[in-house]
Image (cartoon, rainbow, N blue to C red; front, side, top):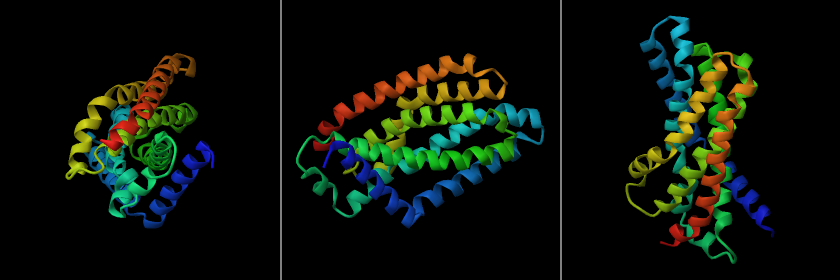
Length: 224
């Protein structure tokens, strides 16, 4: 079995189990809807104020949802005692990280799409900028998922990992969230994609660095 095949099947297995159980996704979507509703009521009925706040609300909500879902990458492995089975498979162990990263990325994109349309309905986020916002969503989600998967694996065997994960995760992903907010805000303001490209290039640099570095370090933290 090739490396890419292993990565694909591991991500597909985790996604199938997650969609079959639906507990994590439903909890994240319910949390997001409640959070957006409260923020929308707190910011008032002015359409201009809501639209101005939409990019920040979108990415802060996605960051919180991502922290809720991050533990799902290794939670089932720990609960079912299957993490050691993965480690016994011959060959390098980077494929475990990339398989979990792909699973985490797919979860974030599903939740991100739901969140995007909820934000458009409650905060007047213009869907005319949808292609550019989708590019930002993919680039931002790759950066966020790469770090959250790494820390989820590092803390997988520790007690209280659900409480520790956001504490170690958020300081590292702040650059990704800030760049994503700025790119989305520029699109909401009506700037052409050419003027948003600098933020996309910055996100792409973050993605390459985080994915490469986390993949190289992952086998060591998993054994530790």
